[in-house]
Amino acid sequence: MNDIDIEIEGGEVLAAADDRTITGLLIPFGEQGRTNVGQFEVDASVVELPADPSVVGLNTDHDRYAPVGRATRLWIEAAGVMASFAIAKTPAGDKALADARNPHGKRRRLSGEWRGGIKNGKATRVPVSGGALVARGAFPSAMVLAADTPDDEEEDAEKVVTDPADEGGEVISSDRSVGVYTDEDGQKYRRVYESQTTVTPITEPAAEAAPDQEESEVTASATIPATQRAGAPKAPAATAATDGPTTVEVMAAFAAVRFPHLTGNSIDDAEGVLAALADITTDLAAGGEVARPNWLGQLYQGVPYEREYITLGTLGTAITLGGKQGYTLHRGTAETPVNHLGEEWAGNKTPISSGVGFTKGQVSSLLKWAFGADIAREFFDLPGAEEAIEAFFRLVLEDHLIWSDTKALETWRTVAGLPIAAKNYPGVDGHDYGSALGMVIQGILAVKAKKSDGRRDTPTFIIANELAYEELIYTPKDLIPEFVNFTASTDWQGSGDGLVLVVGDTGITSTPSVIVGSGKAVEFDELPGGPLKIDALDLAKGGVDRAIHGYLQVFIVRADAVVHIGVADARANATDYQVGDLAKAAAVVYQAVRAGKAGGSVPEAPAVGATVVDGNAETGVIWKRLI
Image (cartoon, rainbow, N blue to C red; front, side, top):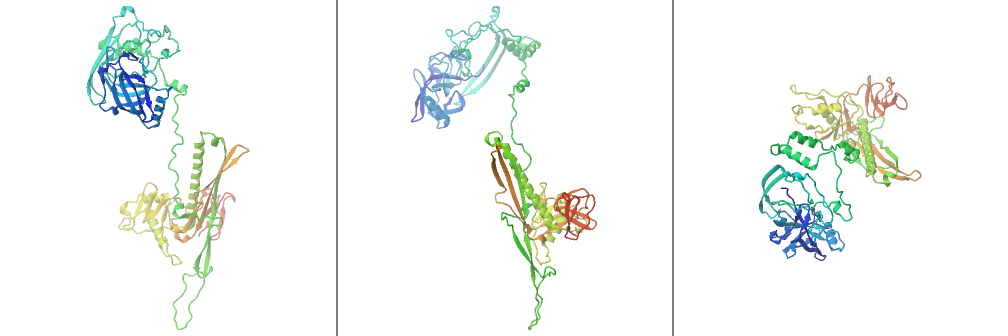
């Protein structure tokens, strides 16, 4: 037998607003209820009330996922089971209480819930487990969530007509099972499930008294048929014949497939009946556009760009229209600088040494970046596409990050200047390490070495090109010098003796090279808060002009604090070069100061420190001769 929940309407509720309680008849006694499981009634003798009424919850429309209260008192009177419920202080509880107080409210009836059985038209056991606020129902004196079955005097009942000669009925399958059921109070009951499938002619109304059932769970929450609603049209007396199998044939086919030894029917015949069922394919859903795709919006496009090179310098916000300006002080004169002033003095009023100093001015440069678009104002006035506009401008802001970081990398290449050739690094008993690791150590030592002014610098970063980084990451730990700390990982970052290690274009691509420097060598300044975002209305065309402006101030403080270890690539014809790229033609080493495309032949070499155009005057690369 099927497990079904029983839900029976009680009476109209009395609601109190002050203490948020409602009271009413939960389960009526001695009334015939007409539900989708047949007609039955409840006697007081079979009712079981829990010792603690708070275990009985209250919901709306028998939806147990819509709780609105809990029982505070349950008792039995002559009319039936009475109940008082405390309404929860929630939006749903407030709504339910207001509905119950309103004389014209939708849900002013209490409905009981329990799990039990039915025998001879009566409930065999009623352990009250819940209640619900509902609109109307199956008992004459109450409103139940269940669908009414029609009275004979109200309208004609639906009939099932079969062959009168076959009224004895034929058993086509049977089943039996035993289980143990535990109710909400923790009490256990034995449940016996027995069923027989028969083909029996029926000439009486479809809504009969409920069949006997042992410990089954009954639900009386079926939808009210259209023919039972007031004013609804009557069901037709007969239906048109169809080419498909009847309900009896389909159920018999299911039984034959499951229990062929009991029914004696052919499985082939049963499968033939089942095969006659109409196909509903996915074409129906697709054609009606009811199977909609799951809209995900903007998809994953990789890890957002994070700047690597601008943060290697001193990054600040001291940006002004006039820029930065300062000087460095040197010994001697600009034409004849000296490394030191003063000499040992003989004393006794003999002349002392003397000398002069000179300054070198340092001025920052200002780089500008901008983007703008004229956008139809519908994107802003109407919902539906503003997400795409905002995502687009986030992408534009990411382009600004890429631009500023690229300019920072160009600056590091330019400041590093002429590359220093890698040395032949010493090995120990055949344990030679890779050339890239030697370049890193050589660059660190070069930055820390005394310069011509007698000053040292403290390196803070290493930029390795991809060839050098691959050598570094594959270096066995046993080949790293014992007193040097070095790490590298597959996320393109690492450290070398405490310095930050990143991967970048050093201006040399054919062989390994590294740039090592101090963060104090260059100062980068930007606007506080990032680029400026400007919106303006285009009234004449119905648009919104949006622009983004970014500025980058670059101030080279000490070029001696940055060195490049490597060998310049040979210059190539018709090749694109970026600012800071290095190229060698014969004994001349150039560095690009303007990006462009090289011409078909080597340009005439200018003086050291001078520039020359290679290729087209407008689009060609401009070289500065380093040596």
